[in-house]
Each structure stands twice: as structure tokens, then as C-alpha cells.
Length: 175
Image 1 (cartoon, rainbow, N blue to C red):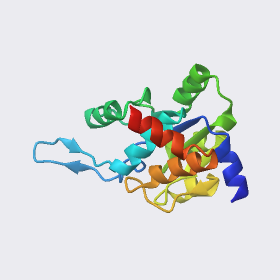
Image 2 (cartoon, helix red, strand yellow; image 1 turned 30 degrees about the vertical axis):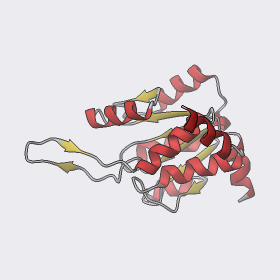
Image 3 (tube, helix red, strand yellow; image 1 turned 45 degrees about the vertical axis):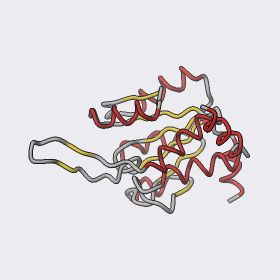
Image 4 (cartoon, rainbow, N blue to C red; image 1 turned 120 degrees about the horizontal axis):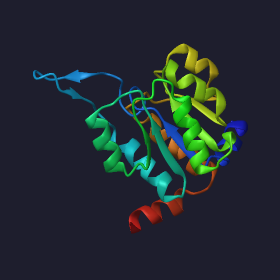
């Protein structure tokens, strides 16, 4: 646990996947062929608290979807990459843009496209419902599943490790 806390203390940017991490990974399709997704509001609050504490938040997804676009806009996610089958390119762009070291990034994922970044960053995290290969290489695994509070769990880990819970809440409430 001490190693986990030490890694979390260094995090300056949390990167998240969408499907299976910010959502439950299920695809809901209505009678007209419209795709619907569910997001947990507590995950969104966790991301907002991180940003209020001065920690960058990024989203890299293989999907191209208006529902996800809308949610990212609602949350104020500035670093948002869509249609990234090979997520390494987006990660390198983000790393260059922010000027952070690999150890200053955390990544939370659930499936094989997430694996290359999970193996590169300082804090690679698998959600509880991740495939076994991702769990094998992750430094930590959440208790909650994707779309059901896993992202909030990670946000709280980082905020607690950096002792930024109070400042995050104060800044969030003042915004």
C-alpha cells in the first residue's frame, strides 16, 4: 500500500478510457439505432475535484460518439482524444503538451487497447471488471467496476495521497 501511495503522490495527470471505465461497458441501442451510454455522476464529481485541485484530466477512447462528446463537455475535459485505436499516439501528444514525466501520469483502463499506456505510466490502474491481461500489468485494481464508481475511487486515492481533498472541495464549491 505504501508503494501505491508514493506513486499516487506524484500524479499530475489522470488519463481515463471511456467504455468499461467511465461507463459500464454495455451498449444500449434504442429502436432507431441510437447508441446510449450511462455514466456515474460520482465518477464525474471525482474528475471535477481532481481538476479543482490542479490535477490534469485526460480521456483517450477508441470510440467516436456524440454521447461521449457531450459528457466530456459537461465535465470540462480539455484533453480529449477520440477514435484512438492505438492510444499511444494520443498519450505521446498529451505528454508533450503537458511536459510531464511518465511517472506523473496515471491511467485507468479495462481492455487490451489500454495496456500499452498502463505499462508506461507511473500508476497503471485496472478497473475491477478489466480483462485479465490488464489486471496482470496494472499496479492497482479498483474495488468498483467501470461505470459504477471506479474512477471516483482512483480520484480519491490521488487526492488523499496528495492531501488535496479539502482544497479540491473548497475550489469546486467556489467555482
